[in-house]
Length: 225
Image (tube, rainbow, N blue to C red):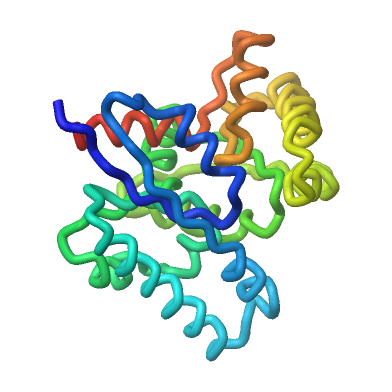
């Protein structure tokens, strides 16, 4: 079986490890591209329209660049990037025949399989609005009246990740998720790739199932084999 090459576009270098450790290395190899600058542009204003178009053009250019590197598929791991490119279909013109997987879409599909209600957990408040808007639009396209409530961790939690304190971040995210599953009456889903380690720890210690983007991505990539 030939190894499939994935071009992975990230906003933060910490996301590289989740794909390197979470994918079958005999089936997939990853070529990583990291650009934190677009996030700062996006945060500057919920940007004026002209600046938002600049960010979109930059990200589309990156997709074209990655597609030209001989990859079999492109994975976008940053939900803010995905939201900035919406509607994503327009951005795909830059990649030609190379498929693009927005990491939240497989997660949306798996989330809808859990039922009609969920608690969606975030550690980065800046991703909430864009992700939830895409989730509800995704559900509507599938004829689902999906109910979801959001839960956001203490603001200092995500700052730990940005400061490079990944172990402390995972510990705080784990405590946050444990508290949610103890209180929630609906399934809990972790919305961000950066929560992968915390999800694994919570599942191991509690026996609960928490849907994460990495789990859903693995399922989607099976179709590329």
